[in-house]
Length: 532
Image 1: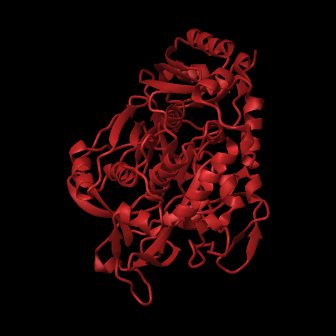
Image 2: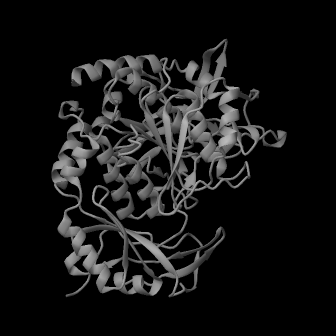
Image 3: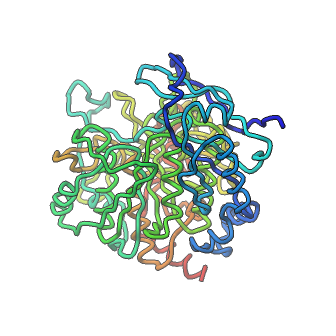
């Protein structure tokens, strides 16, 4: 029987990359095969109901979800049989995650999926990759929804920015404003976060590189005079807690995430899922956190991403499906919206949004510049540093349709025209992200200041941990509730991120606005009582 093209698997080379040679046929690799879920239509109906604001459908426990919506045993058996036919080895199989990890050589995978893996070179280095679509045997058509990991290019970037004290990098503002910095506790206080420690909650953090050093965390939290949270490293796809020792490397992302969450919710446990920076590693880290029956996170913080145009359709669909699963289990997923404004760093021109923040089941977190006076907010505007190019990511998705809770909204352009949303708008919420109003952190023995929307995702995750503690039930999928009650946010009406401008109500720079912590907590408590 003829092979069938796997929908959404088409892959292009990196911009300006060139194929140097065929990949080593004897190189061994692991590939994640995602199969359809049992009762997928039932799950989508539940997720759709939640998206429509119907919280009466309730949340499923992880055990209930696994019993109802895992992969079907015959489908898993079909993938195992396919693997045997091609000499591939099943090294991992998890029904709840619908994931079968196969191991084999480049030559075996080339034959199994009718691809030609090659070694590509580009300005940033080299990677093993492919172009074109993946082919499946007819017997797997409709069973397999994604095949990830054949390509090992770096899929995502951390969304953080260091404060630059060089006077030559001074912002072109008139008048010039002196830089300031805050501890995460001070930022939480400015936003009126409800009291709490996050006790009884677990916050998951996804990392695609770098690591943390426990001695740094102990010293940092001791300096803040808060207890040190329990931090656990979880290995996914052989990823490890691997601190580089360089404060300006990937350790910055890891330490920023942990320190922001831990300062705000010191009694919460923090599970850090380390995975390779590939499409397979990213998805596997997310699904591992969602379906973790040991740590059981109620909130997930993701500060990595890249423009939608750099992803395959199959990868975005698989990640969005994972976020749908999280929504049905009452797990809030906070995702940084990016640090490159309305272009999202795409040099080919046009407006782009960052994924996975653009998933309708993610809480997309944009960035502001926050100024305080006498322990109160004096001014807050869209974060946009014209000198370095850093700005809050936001815009309109080219992949995801308009969710019901954004019906009737419009994106105001910097030139003054407002365009009605036809697809998913990003972000949903915002928070302090400007490096010149940044966060005081400790990385590899060095005290420094960091900004970027990377700080906003863990800021919201820490807030939600406090809210969950106070309410006694998970806040869960917040988006529909926030859009019904925009007064729960601090509306940001000044500034732009390039092609989009702030406006009253939702905008494509800061979403609905920054946190009004006490109002959010009060609303969550009321909502949890209604849902009981």
